[in-house]
Amino acid sequence: MTATRNHTAQRRTRQRTAVEEIVSAGDDFRTAQQIHDELRHADAGVGLTTVYRALQLMADSGEVDAIRNADGEMSYRRCSGGHHHHLVCRSCGRTVEVTGPTVERWAKSIAEKNGFRDVNHELEIFGTCSDC
Amino acid sequence: MTATRNHTAQRRTRQRTAVEEIVSAGDDFRTAQQIHDELRHADAGVGLTTVYRALQLMADSGEVDAIRNADGEMSYRRCSGGHHHHLVCRSCGRTVEVTGPTVERWAKSIAEKNGFRDVNHELEIFGTCSDC
DNA sequence: ATGCATGCAAACATTTTGCATATTC
DNA sequence: GAATATGCAAAATGTTTGCATGCAT
Image (cartoon, rainbow over all chains, first blue to last red; front, side, top):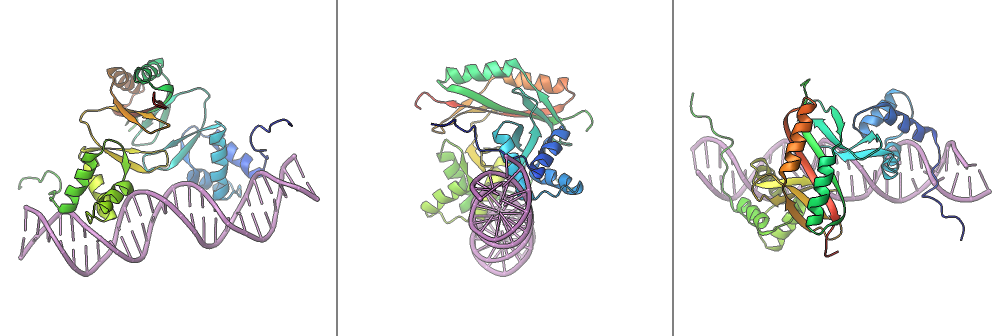
């Protein structure tokens, strides 16, 4: 058989590039709609549908982190690389990435103690930041 | 001034009781709609709107845990009391409640180290359970 | 030239709200 | 009897999909 195509053939389009640029530019989580607004503001001419689709693809490929905010909306942020968690200010929304071997180890061990394998976890810490 | 009423005067109604019973009966997270289905099935005669409202009140008062599932729907589960986290089998959905002073302390300390106050957190651990 | 990507509008799904009516206190 | 709770239908919200057209390859 011929070489297996990695995934789907990703095509480089003006709008997909625009979404990537906007996402890469920021440092915090933004919803698809916020990103669409910014693109609109920059006259990038990218439809909301396309933004949704682009972000989904980017999330699938691990290019961005996708989390769900308190309102149940998806938020996206460029991924800083490794595994990490988020410390979110519940007042202004400021986000700090945190990592900690402590939790990693704890989660893994408690899961295995319960007979779970192939473990991973999601952690969000909420608080009020110093500016608020 | 007259005594301040604690919150709103909660009234005991047939339907609110029915929701509480269904929630107390189960052990896993269910969406408002699933709970409504079960009530419907039991001919409890409780409207979907009421189920939503009842669950919101119960969540506010800490009577149930409310989390958002992967699809962004709210799920509710009777609260076993204290603060805890969930270990979820990604194959069969089995849920184990876990607690751990380790994470609690870690989350609190890392948050405060970043200048965050009034901290709380949400943690979900996913894995494959021994039965799967 | 081929076929994935786009974008509009419409479909969808979940949750919330307005308001008349029923029920609890 | 006063005030809250209910329930329907409709609104609101966020996201997805169908399909004709455009564009990258």
